[in-house]
Image 1 (cartoon, helix red, strand yellow):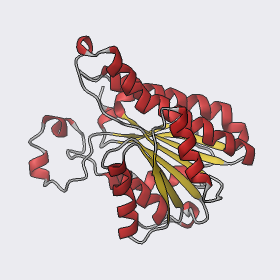
Image 2 (cartoon, one colour; image 1 turned 135 degrees about the vertical axis):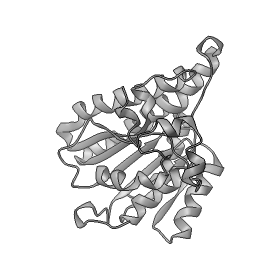
Image 3 (cartoon, one colour; image 1 turned 180 degrees about the vertical axis):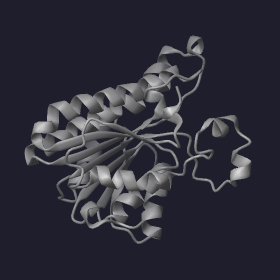
Length: 254
């Protein structure tokens, strides 16, 4: 990925918190390719292994990572203790909490509802609170929350997931206002219909949702990298509280 000098993240330390999905390794690689050292917090070992393998394969800098449930206080403490073992300050926090759940609303149990909100919204809140306190002390920080386009749109069978994403977007905007005076920028990076598979366009366009997407293809996680790097850089100085979408135009539909 060609890198403009003003987007250079050399010397910066980033925490990437992920609940899973194909895009986490690409997020980590984009940050590391731009010069940041990346520490990964993943909900499961398989998710962490994929990120670390991608960074190792490309010989990118990383600070390893830890498996922790960020929706719990013990899990949060475990994650922050593992990070502190490196003795580094934190400049960047990227929350990738898009644990998907789809079910008709009248069939969702209270336990399922709470689990979705816990994984996505509660976990994002807890680590952002912990890392944000450190950023306030240092009077510097960049926070980027990955969200689905369903944060602002409706779709059948996605009420629980969409509510969690809308909550993250609202949290983003509130923290941008609250922490702006501390030189902390908080933004959301919205994604659409993505896949890490290399699927021919002709095959993709057999799907109705792809045909509904203005750019007529699914997104790839590497499409997100350039915007992520900007939002984490020094150049992102007058942008905060925004939801910026890389979704092939889906959000432009009425």
